[in-house]
Structures are given as structure tokens and as C-alpha cells.
Image 1: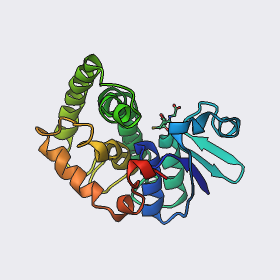
Image 2: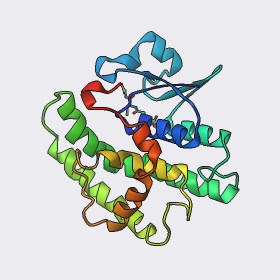
Image 3: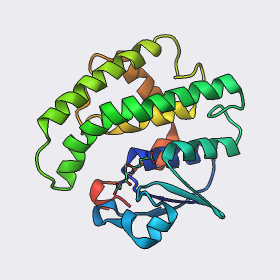
Length: 211
Ligand SMILES: N[C@@H](CCC(=O)N[C@@H](CS)C(=O)NCC(=O)O)C(=O)O
């Protein structure tokens, strides 16, 4: 299987980390987003939305990182995506929350305004967008922190792909100054998730050497 991605992006990193955790070999091809690499005709033939990551498994092309996580974890039985309807629904529930709220409204605006803009020389952060991002981050973090008081991982006592999805943006928490201070249980949980060797094995190098 081959993954086209941009290593520093949480969307690519979490896919590579899950594959490494499951022992699934992935050939990796770096797509240089800083040079429009996801908008070439060759890339658009893989993903017409022009975004990374994309997984190619034989004649099957799959884009959207959440779908890729589910596909990889369905191929190799483990705690990550067990074949039990309620557990799967619970995992998909947290991934859906992440796509729409935790990631989209909280983490991504702060990542873009405070980190991506700096790396790409796109000017100063838009402080109105930052303020809204901080408000949304706090709103969702309160829910996540309270939930993690009940159990060590999002869906119970075992780690699942929901933990990978929701933890991935937090690797850039310091650089994007996420307001994590009041959320001790999120910090403890992230400590457990990020201690898995698969993250280090697939970690991006310095941004300048993002391949
Ligand atoms: N919902 C998508 C988001 C993918 C996405 O936004 N990828 C970004 C990098 S984080 C990208 O490739 N952007 C290039 C572009 O929009 O031109 C997923 O989870 O795969």
C-alpha cells in the first residue's frame, strides 16, 4: 500500500502512526503542499479535492484520513477498531465530533493562524479568528476532559483509532499555543497516547525537511 502525504500534517501523521502501530508497511510519497503538490493533474487523479493524505491499495484509492484509519484498522484485527457494533459506533461518534468540532472549530484555526501562516510567511495571525478558535477549543476541551475522568481512553480501557484522530493535532499544541493548561486529564491522556512508539517512528523531521 502507498500513502501520499505531507508528513507534518496531523492528517498524514496519524495515518502513518496507525499503520506503524498495526505493523502494516506503507510506502510513503511526500507531497509538497508548500509547492502546490496536491493540485497537479497526477495528484488530482488520485484525489479530486486536492488534499492529502491519499491511500492507494491496488486499484482502490481512498482519501479522507478518517476513512483511511478505519480501512487500515479494519484490515488488521486489534483494539483499534473492534468488530463490535457499539464499540465501532462509539469510535465513529468521537471521530465525527473531531471532524466537525474538536479539529475543525478548535484545533485547526489555531494551527493555521499561529503555525502554518508563520511557516509559509503568510503574515500575522488574524486575531478575530484566533479568539473564536480559542473559544471553541475551550468549549470542546471541557467535554473531552470530563469524559476522560471516566476512563483512560476515549472509548474505554483500550486505545482505538478515535484516540489517534483526536490526539494528532495536539502534537503541535505548543507551537500553536493551544490553551491546554486547565485540562489536566487531556494532558495525562495525551501523555499515554503519545508515548506509543509508532508516533516517534513516523514523526516528521524539522518542517524544512518535511519529507
Ligand atoms: N478532511 C481531510 C482534510 C485533508 C486536508 O485538509 N489536508 C491538507 C493538509 S492538512 C491538504 O492537503 N491541503 C492542501 C490544499 O488544500 O491545497 C482529511 O482528514 O483527510
